[in-house]
Image (cartoon, rainbow, N blue to C red; front, side):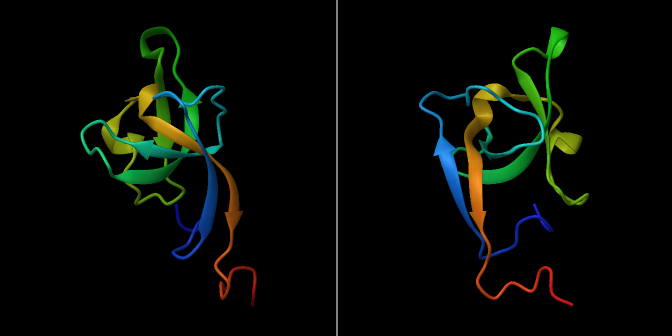
Length: 99
């Protein structure tokens, strides 16, 4: 999720009680656990909520174009979204915003 998030940032997240996060919102950041990689959590931005033939699916992307995300995976199941990021604490010695 670089440049939005950097190593050392802390995230406050709202974990889902069920496999899918209720009230999905486009452009918000979520914690994802892919079905084929249990126990591995990644952070991605929800770009689009599927409808029609893609109902129950979402399109997610990292903020970096080199990110591995729906651009490679395609649509993923809503059930792979485990939490929504509520707040970020910036790394204490982050140089973001400094010139």
